[in-house]
Length: 110
Image (cartoon, rainbow, N blue to C red; front, top):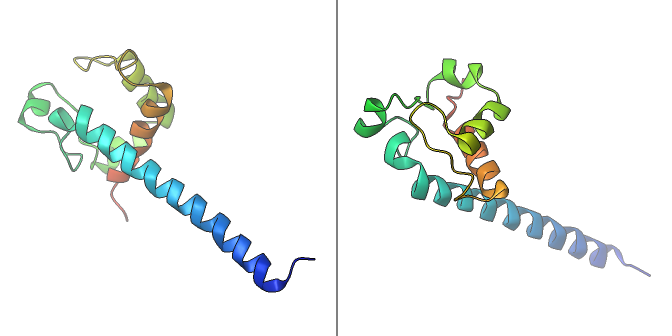
């Protein structure tokens, strides 16, 4: 028989595992972005001087964020776009998905 205390312990343990996993996923996404993207897209989502010369989008621009779909972000990472290279031979599908989600971190809050 499971006591109330044991049940709450199990609930908290499961919640901890999921929250830790989510935090690790976000950290991995940031690390991937920093290692592969920030040279052009900037640490905070604004294009660097190099990125500006290559016409990299400003991820902090509300119009950009509202105009582009998650699928389009993933396709740009996978296939490349304009002067941006394809990352499909460097990043795994899971890593590309994490980076695509990270792009949304820069979306301005209302």
